[in-house]
Image (tube, rainbow, N blue to C red):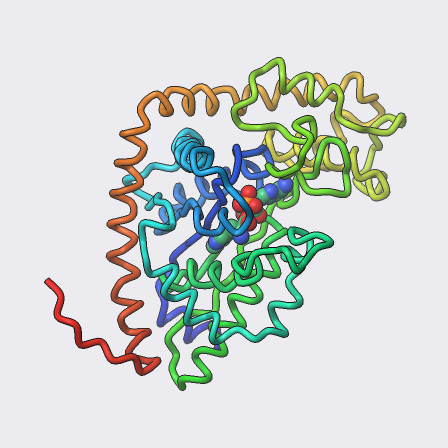
Length: 347
Ligand code: AMP
Ligand code: TRP
């Protein structure tokens, strides 16, 4: 479908999701949350979802899942998502996600799913023991996006392959049923921090599921913890280079420079103009100060919001009602296209 035709048919709408499977990290903040807020400020209609159904593709303790869902909601609001302007809700409260995921399970091909690298990473060595949900995960993600006819999806670099699959599913559905129904979604992967790496290993992404807490900055870490984690972050003995080419074979140094750049709202060239030639003994405390000044207002606000979980639940409930109002007619139309008879009397 030509871009121009699509633009005419589908109004720009953003959708993105984060799994409430642990605390939010600096990676989530720089790769996702901070950019969600920028999109909201541009005045684009945006729907943000805490994907609890994705989270249970690997085991979650029920009480921890409940807590993590509320804490992630608090993180979104504390980072600047206004639940009046944007829609913020948790996935299980809008049934269209699960319904459309089933249809997409029947559109996506085994061969496509077999190529998904996140499944391979998460399933580990024993693929036979992985849940069926973990395998089907990307079809549910396509359903999240397409249940709203979302046209743009801001995510970190790690989600690129899933968004390609979402496009493939939309194209195949439209082709098989001879319709122009689902938009072909564009990924929005931009900025210096689309892939924030682990503080212990510059080749692995910073993740809430890494067993080492020293590998990540959590949005709830206090100032001392943040400073200590940066101080202990793995680096090499060389001073910082003067140019970005000098970062090429230095994954850990590059990661810290990129984090600094993203937090300061500048690019890596500007960071090196200031710190090139300096050692990490100088750079790390500056980075820690910058991170503390960016994150401490967020963690303080999260703490305040978490005092009233009832209010958070009410916000998620209202968000779900607004999300449902968009997704339900799309779902009904989708059933018609597929040829499902629906004659039950409701209401
Ligand atoms: P997840 O925590 O895996 O549910 O990811 C939620 C969002 O945060 C997605 O848009 C990810 O691409 C993004 N994200 C997660 N970890 C990182 C990271 N280390 N660097 C950049 N973006 C990330
Ligand atoms: N798979 C995403 C992640 O692990 C989370 C996610 C689920 C998502 N559904 C989505 C992101 C829809 C964007 C749009 O990070």
